[in-house]
Image (tube, rainbow, N blue to C red):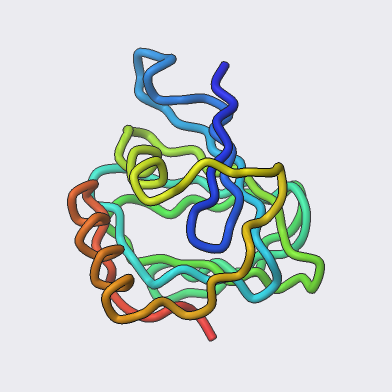
Length: 152
C-alpha cells in the first residue's frame, strides 16, 4: 500500500491507495488542511471525486450548491461539474478523496513536494500570478480546469 506524503498547496496529502496499485485506477488520498483552506473553483473532466470527511467540517460547493459535510459524511462531485471546498472548522479538517481515474493523484504528485514532516506545510499565502498560472496550466494537463476563485 502506498503511503507517500506530500505538501500540496497548503495541505498535507497522503496517498493511501495509488492508482497504479489496482486495475480500476482508483486513487484514495487523505487530506489534512487548515481552517479556511479553499482551492480555486475547478472541474475534473475525466473523473468523479468523492469526499469522505473524517475530522472537522467542510463546506462543499458543487454545481452552484453549498453543502456542509462533517465527520462520517460523504459527498460526490461528479466529473464535469465545477466544485471546490472550504474548511469551516477552526481546528482544520481531515478527509479522504476517492477518484475514479489517475489524473487527480498525478496532479497532486506533480504539484506537490515531499512532506518533510507528517504535518501541514508552512503557510504559503495567496499565490503569485505566476504561481496561479502554473497551477492552472498543470491542472489542464491532468484534465482539471480552474474555473474561478476559492470560496471566501
